[in-house]
Image 1 (tube, helix red, strand yellow):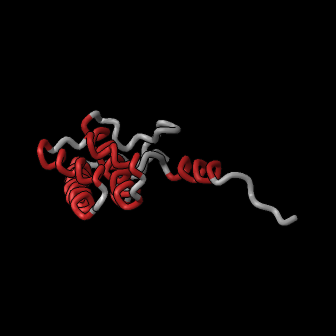
Image 2: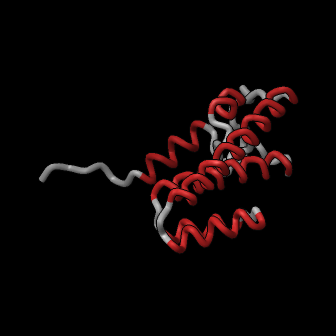
Length: 133
């Protein structure tokens, strides 16, 4: 049975949710930058305040700041999902090319894979089972 497609209303809701999440994540990044005593982070914070250049935020990952890195990774996922929405690739599994179930996308709007491909990906990336010696 073919996977149902997202309706226009579903897409509008997902787009609004993703944009709201992006705004929240940007506020979090700015807050983390302001709270840091690291001179490199303060310099990046000043640059963000001057020109709102979010490409600068990518440089934070190099600073290995765990909290900021997590937020930046999520921000990248949200931005990528919004880009897929703009290019009409949203909801297409990156592995099999099939449709990702609407319920999955509504629950997890940054999903890249259908349930079957995600399960296979996780099984493969977890490696071989550990055995007792």
